[in-house]
Amino acid sequence: MKKHKICVIGLGYVGLPLANSLSVYHDVIGYDSNKIRIDELKNFYDRTGEISYQDLKNTKLKLISDPDKIKEINIYIITVPTPINDQKQPELTALFEASKLVGEKIKTGSIVVYESTVYPGVTEEECGPIIEMVSGLVCGKDFWLGYSPERINPGDSVHNLSQITKVVSGQNEDITGILSDIYGVINNGKIFKATSIKVAEAAKVIENTQRDINIAFVNEISMIFNNLGLSTLDILETANTKWNFLDFKPGLVGGHCIGVDPFYLAYKAQKIGVNPEIILAGRRINDNMGKFIAERVMQELEVGDKVLILGFTFKENVPDIRNTKVIDIYNALNNFGVEVNISDPKADKNEVKEVYKINLVPLTKEKKYKAIIIAVQHEEYRELSVEDLGTCLISKGLIFDLKGILRRMNNPKKIRILTF
Image 1 (cartoon, rainbow, N blue to C red):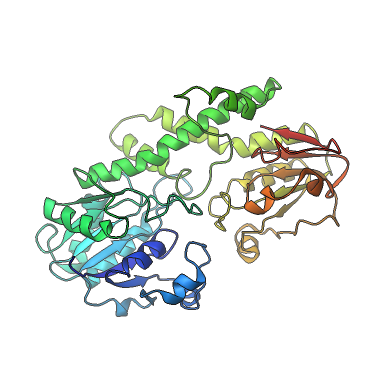
Image 2 (image 1 turned 90 degrees about the vertical axis):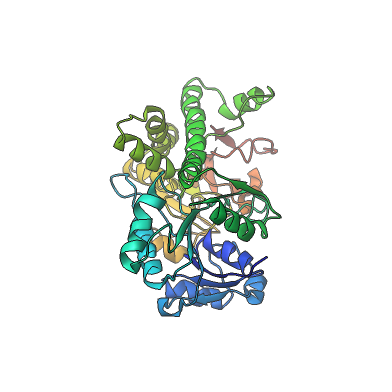
């Protein structure tokens, strides 16, 4: 296999593991504009938890925050965030800035690969022209584009970069073949060659959109069954005994993928005159779950009661608080006049304070609450018993177990537990 000089731009959940894996076989520069992030990585600390101290200590990856040190590169891989703005429309500023940076550095014969989630057409119709404009080179003649959507699942040790199938696509068969070789070496050749860049872009954006819609369905039925006094988790467990029933659970849908990507597809659909009814309906349902949970909790509480929420990150066993929907429960309960505290062993307390103006508290029996809400199933919470949590409750207190962690546990003191 030919050895390439690669620069991975953006060292978050996606870029860092990718750059580290590629550095085993190629000369790789990992670039991030956040100097603090680079300094932490150079000190063998990854705040995302994706790369261990020892792996960072042993990595061959060259870490930089100075764009002037990006030199002699023939493969650029862009893995920057693609969030949404306040109007829930695509926010592509970081992607375009990365494209400009590449345009300033690119040489004839280079390949630029995008991994960030976008709607179909962004790579070729929006990013390519930016590189052309800045560099003065011609796309498809002097340099080529590729798209290989990220698929790793933060905090998931099973579906990691070395285990998943990697989709690759290029402007022609030769470029696709080169990308197949580059990516294939890090996942034992589990490569799928998409027929075009737009097909790969579209496949990525529907993967999370499909999941969002499926979760929206179980969230909606959980609203129905809660009003009927039935356990949604018991019902889903029963329905799952049928071979073709899809196993989705109700809950909060936040983060930087599932809660964002559907808006990218909806935006593109509206641009071409298609009204994406199911996609946006699913988003409305999932975005309202925090309010629904708070209203359900308030049926058992009074103004002035104290509540502890366990978990603040957008999903279990990761420190990422971006677009967490736990904040919706917190805000709604506050508006109802309840005193709310939040505890989270994974989240960075300084980051939570800076972004949300919330002081995280420890889980301790020294302070008593009328209710505890288990919002995120961190491994630390799965190790707690009903009695452990009961020590943090006042007399006749209760636990709202949104994740079903306590469903099969002994409850000797008969603490009241409510689930979806």
